[in-house]
Image (cartoon, rainbow, N blue to C red; front, top):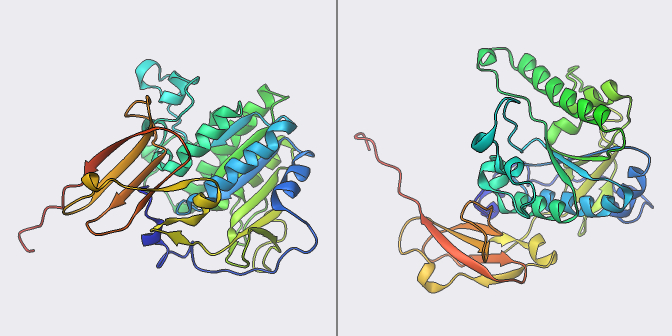
Length: 326
């Protein structure tokens, strides 16, 4: 959430290598995805919630699919309040759909700069944003895990299926986390959202996993679905290279066109954590910034920004209070 994936990577399983055999003779992954997307109305791409690169990849998918008539971006991360919520209680993306940016109040994960950029790029391409997350039911807090998962997956699929029925010409790109993109039941019989949506609509979605394989090569490529996965779980498996960091920031953003910008000395912290935010000049404080990063004294951490004019702001993080025992 605060731009420091370098601190997550050493201990996170989402960064640990899981090498898979390359899919032979298929060419560029984006070209393959676009070609396969012509045959359906639904493309589902998953992500690790800890890897911003996956959001950048989905942004590239959105661009590749736009000429094919894909015009809706559905994201489980978007806030999805009850239908009777109106006025100022609606999330900003519904109050002000014409804004070119997302706001922090649009959804929890959307406060991360990479997610904010995905929203920006989709809006610039003319995509409509569609929330579909299941509504929280406090009465089921103590229900068995399998029951809670099944209810969530069913409600997500129902919302998407209803939209597709009501908009028969729409073509939808769905950005999900992890197993929600699973197109067939898991070995334990659990059916996730994509499998349920396929059954409800009769539409065979193109499902793309970014979380199954990683670190297999020097460039992003398509890989063979591992034998441990049920056959048909995902149509395509994307294998990203091992994550690299430059000045403690994800190198993929530099490859995508960002520039590394030094944080002005006057804004660097003397003690504790400080959050540095870079917003496009003229955008309000509530807008998801183009970059947001946490730094500590003495760290050489850069802002990563596309060319433009920005206003910087800082937030100091108060240290956690110590208990009497400490």
